[in-house]
Amino acid sequence: MQQYPERGILALVYVNLALQVFDGIATYVGIRSGFHEANPLLAWSFGYLGTAPALLIFKLHACFCLLALWRLRGSRLAVPALSVSAVVYAVCSFAPWTAALASVHMAYMAS
Image (cartoon, rainbow, N blue to C red; front, side, top):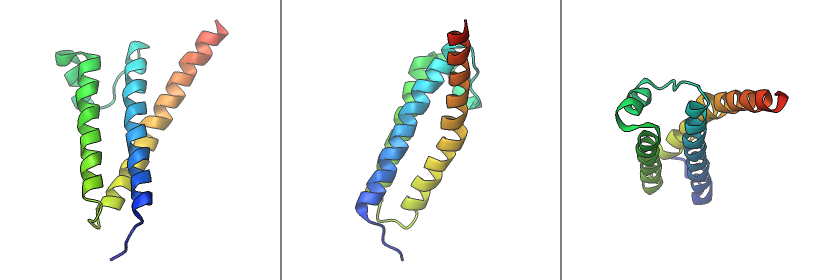
């Protein structure tokens, strides 16, 4: 079984936490700018709880799951789970929201 350095695992946790914070803020700004949420469960919860409360609940849950992975860092699945999570959020959240919000910013600057 491969041992990963604790600092490396902690770095993965921090990257994932930063991606969660970015996703929450970008989603809120994107919704307020007229974009739609792609996650159907989250979009459904917006109608019942409101945008900010739903995002807060979902993002806190995600952060607690990341902290649970930190506590389970001795497991052979912790590092792959953190790595996959970071890649998925980078590809499915960071890149699309960055492009979408940049287009809004560019349109605002052009007017």
